[in-house]
Image (cartoon, rainbow, N blue to C red):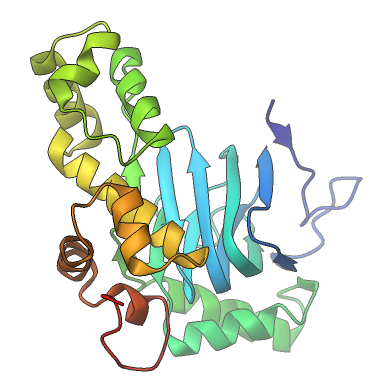
Length: 268
């Protein structure tokens, strides 16, 4: 059952205390924050480690030095892959009108990263204080131009298609083709293909590729080697995983996760 959190920006009497607030927390690998929602817009930043956000609308994977935007009143869970240093900013709704009311993963520029970390030194930030007002304004300004990262897996709403989704979420390496997966979902292959395209804006093949990519990323963050992560995620070989990763995200898995060594070690 989803828990509705109390406002962090308002007092118990409903009086507005501030326009932005922060929470910093470190979590061990495997920790899960159970389903909850906030009355504020929320920015989750992964200072280190990988977070996986799950909501009714889909799944979003947040690598190190990226962030995910969560609109107010969105029930969600957060799972940790590897040790995670989470930095969270809460915004008064409509403080960032440039961000539409949807979850999405974003790239975080070096300047925005430093602003987030600096803001987390304050429990609350109020525009009535000139220094805090400037911090709020700079963060909001930086958020206007953020780039979305293709690290989301949208879910269909059709119950039959969701049976296919749940089966593959439980085992992304499942090698059954769609026709066999449809045997237990109560609809034909053609119907499920249509539903995926209409409701996720992705054909089933593309959706399955995205699932395997995100699963591989989670496994790498939890400490798996590239070969083991690729095979468990359903790829035929590590090279196939690296090729798809590069195609989607423009670089190799280890570089994307911030190894910083500049070497091609993925095949080891």
